[in-house]
Image (cartoon, rainbow over all chains, first blue to last red):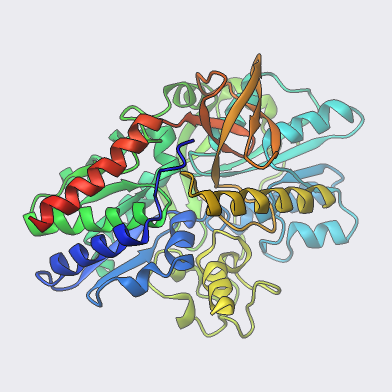
Length: 361
Length: 108
């Protein structure tokens, strides 16, 4: 695009860090929460925490879409795979533990479980292999849900159905802000979720909760400026909603994607792994699209699963209450090669990001 | 699984190219297929809902452009095979200008 664009300019970074330090010196402690696995990756990979003053803490919220899907929904996918359906999923989903096993374990037992880059690939497979029944395990936040909606609207072949596990970010942010013991001072809102939903859904945070909120991109400078903007708002005592990622996030978001999502999905209450039920946080296929609902088609429903394995602190890592290094299993019983909890499985899980970064240093 | 490895390798090349050139991008070192990552790519041609996009260094892929109004030459953010937004070069330049302005103002 523009080769002269310098979104990783070290000199700029030094200057903004200096400004952050100056603003932070006037504050007591500041706890900023982001809710995106890719933000956590940027922060950890580029060592941004080490640049911040000691009274500014950036914690990772529930930004890993694979980590927050409850075990019961994985159990449903595993059941379908063991019943002879071809379960198609994203790579990150494969090793996430259900109550007793993962989809990879099911594959080892002979089930047909396949990994794809996107839902379109699953539909193409179903078109080619008409004699098999396909189930696409649709995991992901608002960034991913429109792609599922596109395929449902396009009337895919009859031999494919969808196990919809899409979740919505703003209701989870609401849960975090209402957790008084987390005592957050600001949000870095996720850039690519915002590409779809736009700016409006975050208004509630500054307006109702007095929480500075900045939508930020994923370059290290994006994140640093996000932190700077939050500190600036705190020092002025004027919490507001700002968009730092204007090159990809429009005010209204992606209206086409929003309309498609509304056409295909309805918003219902939903369980999040380790967090319980969050009101209006989950997408479900509308009645007119129910023929593509895998649970209804094959009469599969698992109410409760084992979300957290003994000793695992994923449910606390997911909301930033506990750092991965504070979990007794981290890099001992639980490693990226042999993960115990979902946060260590997914490349967007806080534990895996920390584990890989610690290996590098 | 071979496809997964191959794609991981391709994305790694993209990562390296972006790292070297400093393009606007979100990048993650991938060894498996990620699901919540969006990478910018240039639209090479469009046919109906599909488009061929260039991720750099000759990495070309068919993606779905039903969710955006993209034209040939635009940069789109691609997530899991679907373009989710057209990137604005103007806004990218504006961001850099604003950053410098903020820093200069704060120093004054």
